Length: 142
Image 1 (cartoon, rainbow, N blue to C red):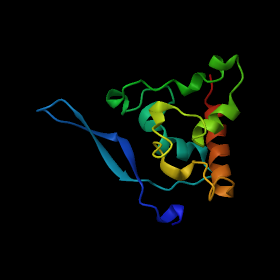
Image 2 (image 1 turned 90 degrees about the horizontal axis):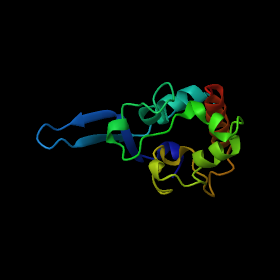
Image 3 (image 1 turned 90 degrees about the vertical axis):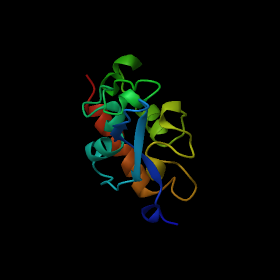
Image 4 (image 1 turned 180 degrees about the vertical axis):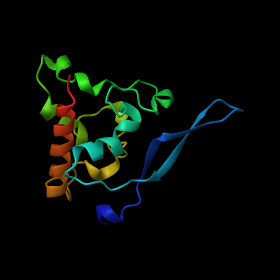
């Protein structure tokens, strides 16, 4: 089954609903939205901003529902001795580096759009997505 035909559901943290009776956060699940693989900013807003915030500082609308607060992505270079960690960011996006906050490799927050797998790992679209989202994150560094 092709990626575009997949109905994989991912959390849409931006749509949080609070229950008055139980004070629990309900997370609405929706089909993954397709974005332009050449637009790092569009992908960031669609797949990352709900947790990391539109400004990438870790203040997205889903933050209250998370066990661990998301990091400030504008300080990746600062936290890496002044050099943006492009290779590590790419590995995280591809699901090659495990971050528990992003979910298991079977169900990362953004689904299979960035996942390295045999039928997609070398695809032009995957490489474009990883390159442009990494480049966008590099552009927002302090």
